[in-house]
Image (cartoon, rainbow, N blue to C red):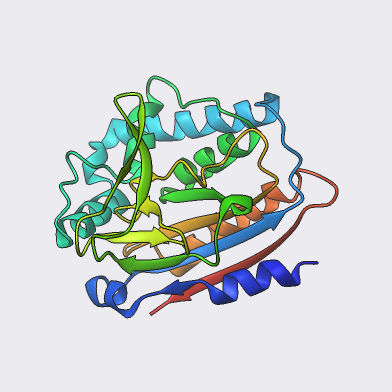
Length: 236
């Protein structure tokens, strides 16, 4: 039933300290179940090629750091002490890869990466089968655990105190708002249940945020006959 997806999104929380840092912050969420896992296909490849062409046009007019939503996220990173030249938000990282070609991973990942570029918004995806409780966006104490890879080895890191993090009941799921996801909840070739997180700042409008979420929801609904989903937007 879709009720469990709605319950998850209803329990999703953005801490007041995050809104104090950026009152213009909004997040759109989609929880989805019933996805049929498949490798990259002609449809997902075509969408990525559309996104690559879009990115090349955008970057022919100005550098990536001057694109309005990228610039807003660079400013947000500086506000909690991160250096955007070293730790790029997920949108900027994808845009910088577009000229040489976006990665082809699997159908689900290809679609949400393309949507991120086409709508110019940081967008993360997490496997809900590996999630513990509901997502929370908070400022870190510095004691939370974050499982990642460094030098080819699995390690556990900790965020900086005050860093903005997405987390669940077990630990950090994404550091620096939308910089790097943990290994535990990352989407895989077998993901059937997921939550997608759209992070928005001004100048991205509410209408543009809803359009991005609706676009992904429409495409997710086509990933199997039993797909069901729920959506929510959280603002200050």
